[in-house]
Image (cartoon, rainbow, N blue to C red; front, side, top):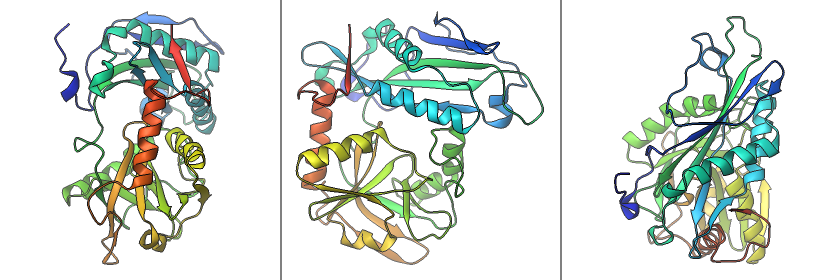
Length: 339
């Protein structure tokens, strides 16, 4: 293959050797198929194209100092995909089939797992979507599950450095009681206009407020939000927020390092009381927040006064990455080693 500059790898698509597919037809899931084609041939009336029947996951595999490849929290991702499928009326893929397909895709593309020293990783993108041809608005009966992988570098080119975020009140990410808790493509499409608007103004991403009252913090663009005040790790709770597996992991580690965890509705005004804050997710782990500007209300909440990540955010970031790369013991059973 063409030589890859692992240390300067961006967060984008790099062609790998294989992907893995499983089809759902006649009420049951078929056998796992290995494919080298990057393209998918589907009917023009497929339900994923017309009615948005599509859900996906995001995971990573890491190569440790010992040369072993580790996949982070594979079962949690499988369970979340099942929840997403329930939410938009798709057939649920059994957890064991999900795990088999992900491990197979990683093993087949082992040469694309970046070396330990690079700080890069292999991004794993499982996706499940409706392939059955129909025009009426009702759930599909045929689906395809695909696992593709690609090596990636840091999500933000600045790395682990605080960025500014914007509150743009003219946009909603999802409707109250809608699909916010599911990892479906429609949620991300709905947030793109706001995200591009924020970037055009010099911000890293949008910090959405709740869609009903515009009072509470929701999600930070494509990631969960957390703030640290004193020795408390505070993160918003709402049926409109995707349950981030990274955030779930950070909450566990926060307790381990002596922080109290509060998962509850968080008023926008509380931003002024935070010593640290971050957006957290699979892609970036933690992206520290420098400040949040509420442009419509002409308010600015400065969180990082020195332009650096706070001590607790740094500790949590380093601790989680150490577990992912195998530098710290996995006492929570989060890691699957690819044999």
